[in-house]
Image 1 (tube, rainbow, N blue to C red):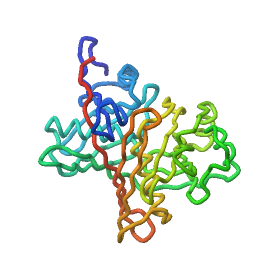
Image 2 (image 1 turned 90 degrees about the vertical axis):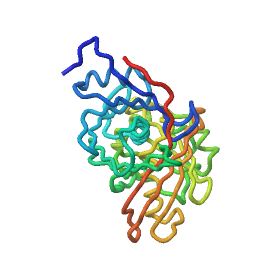
Image 3 (image 1 turned 30 degrees about the vertical axis):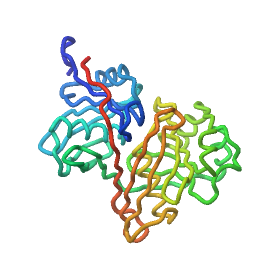
Length: 298
């Protein structure tokens, strides 16, 4: 059912994967969406106009049921909105630590809270198991063309594959950060490729150190021309690189970092920890800070 028209719906606007106002990736957070139907949630997400908005539709104990919307459509999961939600819940005193479970359209997502002198510092998401799909080599020229770069600038030592820990992206390695910044996306071509590859986005990445990567993520197929900082894709990328031995590991733990958003003037950082069993990722955790930018009602 819908709320009456005179009912005001409280929201927070949060920048995730940063501690600096105006940086990172913005998300809307609606803590009480009980009774809101999908059309109303979509209208709120469209009005807020941030890349994704997360709605808490029900809670029970340490479990919350959530839904995610871009300004144009509902999506199964969103990493940065999940980090934003965790921070708001912690700051409001609804979550004081321990495991918080989110029930999403991709299944159960467990959150852990990192504290600094008793204050919320970082939210960690335990992502779904890594899934991989190969990308036909015949598509490499088409992918490069959609990104406005020469095919020769694709990195031949890193994987060009589709991967998911909740949302599917096609990961496109290029030789260096200059190429990442030089990408001139053809959004119509990327949308067509996304449909053909059955993915949400094309995620372009380049190494800056053995365990740090610089990236941009293009998702026009779901109404996001360029996503500033993408937690779910970052988790899939680092897990995939850990599984293929492309980043160093200490014992059964590999740690990687994603730097994203610089091309949009909203830099942020995603931290990923991957616990492996042999060469297979067993636990994938994506961590990020966040800051509340503003709060209001509509």
